[in-house]
Image 1 (cartoon, rainbow, N blue to C red):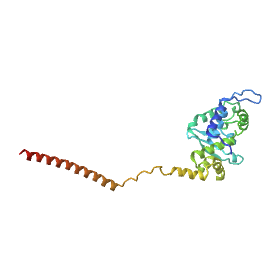
Image 2: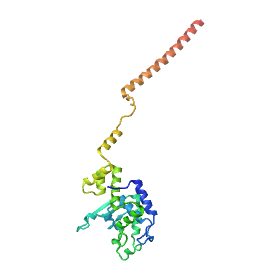
Image 3: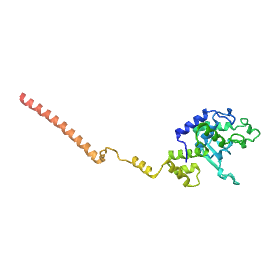
Length: 253
C-alpha cells in the first residue's frame, strides 16, 4: 500500500511546481495557472478524493463559506441516483481551492466555451486526463508510485498518524468496510504492541519517587508545634532578662 511521507510529499509538490511540462512533441506546454497539476495532486492528498471523482468535480461544488466540497462518489457513477459525499476542506488551503476554481472559470480554457456555469468541470475532458498527467510526472520525476490511489493512501495514512483513530480514518476515507481501514493500520505498524508500549510510557512512574504529601491534619499539628516552640523560646529569653535585672537591683542595695 504505497503512500507518501510528509516530507516526501512536500518535495513532490515543489518539483511539480518548478518543473516544465512538455507535451509528446517535447514542446513546453503553457498552463493557464502555474502549478495546476501540483494543485490537483495536493487536493487529492488533502481531501481523500478519488481520481475518478476529480473528473466530475465542478467549481459550483465548492462551498468556501462552510469549507466543504460535494463529491460525486464514483462507485455509484452508473447508478440512476448518484451518491453525493460532502467532504470537509481545510481553511488554511483556501488559496488552493480558489486557484482550482479560477482555473475552471469560463474564458480560461477553450473546453469551457459555451458550457453552462453549473456544468463547468475542474478537469474537463479536453484537458489532459489525470491518468495522463500522472504518467508524465512519473517519467519526469522518476517517481513510479505517483497516482491518484497513492495520494488517497497518503490522506488516510496521515489521518491515522494524527488521530490514531481507525474510526475517524474510516469516516474521512469513506470506507465501506472496517477491514479496508485496518489495512492502513497494519501498513503503518499501528499494532497492539506499540499501543501498549505507548500507554506504558505515558503512565510510567517517576524515576525518583517524591515524598508522600502530608495530610491536612498532620500539617496543622506541625504548624502548631513550631508556633509553640517559638513562644516558649521567647518566654525563656524574657524571663532570663527579668532575672538579670532583679539581681542587679539587689546587688545595688
